[in-house]
Image (cartoon, rainbow, N blue to C red; front, side, top):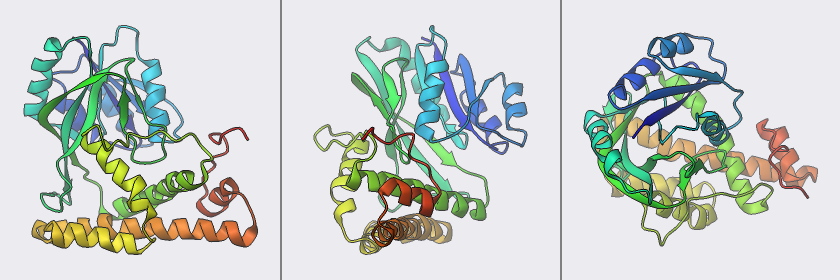
Length: 305
């Protein structure tokens, strides 16, 4: 069974060689979709034998789905990998041994994903490992059309592997906070869409299916999203840092839980409040408010009125 690894990039020279090396023993083809790198990302990817495609970026979901449509017709299995991620050797071995044994009814494979922050593995807080669907048959899976936190949707049965992907970004904390500031704006778009329904809403949310990603998305959309803004960020942080013992992750872990578990979530809530206030004060529609306040143009994705 052939495996094609798809990686989206922009200025990933610190990570791309490592990512490709981690799948060198199992990949039959690497496809890198670059959205305008001005560093050595493309050069380094080519040196590893990757095929390079260039396409303007709107969202991760749209970029990845565009990539799927460019793959050759003989593509059998696809592995989605972020540039700052590593496929561990046990997972690589499991993929190599499992793919040839799967029946035609199996369309996707769930694996575990863990994160390192400032060089330290995050072990507490109730977050990791996250079960994610990252390997799937070409033609049987697509990415949810969302602005943030997108997952692969597959039509058919799935299998499970215990091996892990490690997210280990080597960029600075300044880079991380700037990126998450942009992420917060994108997440606000999805939250506003839950309320106003101006775009198609695709989601893996499913409390009955038993898959971790589906249950967590259901809780986020049906429970967390309905809690008071600001307060929910504090409650979530308290749950992670105190109840689920996030403080045991040391100085780096404390930084991660505070920044990702409170600061980021509170920033999302306040940006959401900012847009909603702008709508009321200026008597404009949600799409105009998103453009004026967040600088994001969603008009091309909005439903036809």
